[in-house]
Amino acid sequence: MAKCSFCSKELERGTGKIVVRTDGKILYFDSRKCEKNLLKLGRDPNNYKWSKGE
Image 1: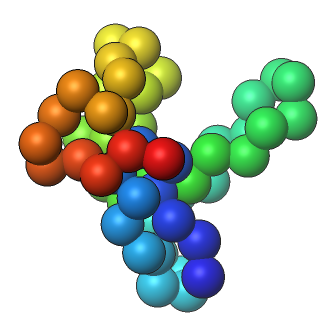
Image 2: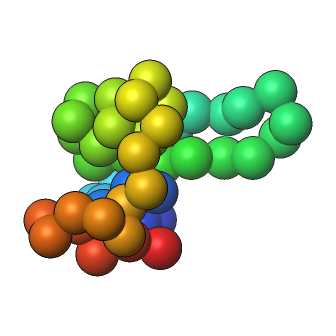
């Protein structure tokens, strides 16, 4: 099982989204909210109460 790269929520098999960056790092996301906050907005997960961070 993978964890969301932003909020650290456990992902069930067959759910979520996987993004592979050009440097080869694999990111897992459980929702569009987490994906947008990390990739587009560049936010730090440790600054948000709803996110457990990495």
